[in-house]
Amino acid sequence: MTKRAELVQIIEELDGRLPVTHSTPAATLTARVLTLWDKTLSPIERRQTSLPDEARLLDVTEQLDVVAAAFSDCLWIETTSKAEPIQVPVPADSAAFIAPDRLLITAPSAWRPGRQFSESHRVLLLNLAGEILAETLVEVDDATPHLLRHPTDPTVVCDFAMGQDGNTLAVIQAADDELVLREIFRTEEFVNLAFDPTGKRLLLGPYPTDPSRAVVASWPNLDILASLDAESLGLAIGFDIHGGYLNDDRVLLLGTEQAPVLATGSLTDATIIDMKDLEAWAGADGFVESIAPLSDDLFAAVLWEHGQRTTTLWRICDG
View 1 (tube, rainbow, N blue to C red):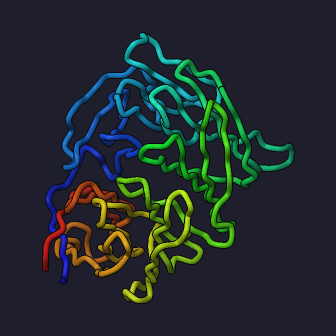
View 2 (cartoon, rainbow, N blue to C red):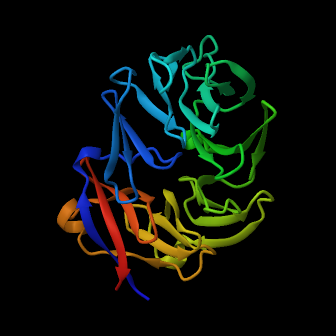
């Protein structure tokens, strides 16, 4: 059946961004104000923080009582029970609360003399007092990490992206305040898109150097259960690095500079979604730059046109 998407709303306050979605609800941090967003991208709470004006939000606990942010080569941890944030002198570039009182972060190692970038990344486990409980090292050059937290286990899948040099995908587990890291899919170049709500399936997209195939793998065995080829859908540039689960058995992917793709959780019955209102809002040369599934039939999309980004909300309907 043909599917289309109708524009529901332009979210001007998000100003071309998508909220941080490690936690539920999604959140943003702007000029010290933490905003929590519901499944329709409506603000449900605003909270003044003591963080610096330009602090970048990394994650919020599910209890919404602890915020982790990055600013000026420091990790900042603010809890509602303390007056002042804790500063940890680590240049964190990603973070995820894997338990109410445990925070996993990544940070580039110090540059070697004569080099212009980090040749490895630190992975650290901290408590809410900012104490480092465990640490391990990943050998990656000039990497940008992207953390995906498991829905129930103290585990993340981290994509260490290295631009044209590919990426390293790793599972990082914390048990008894120790870290265990193992690289996965070494012969493939996948990116970590999403766990399904049960945590039993992992959706992986292709790295941009070969954007031809998205797959679903079992968890924790990581056997590939299903795959979807971009060419079979007529996607000229392949799949983008954005996507996720709308519900237990509905997946949303993104065709690069083309349109979202809807499929079952087993990547069957895939169809390109017709975004009838896209040109009216993004212009003839505009396209969907990124997406974020929100609920059964709602997704957020950042539209791009000539350097201008706009955050929008769309509803999936029958054609």
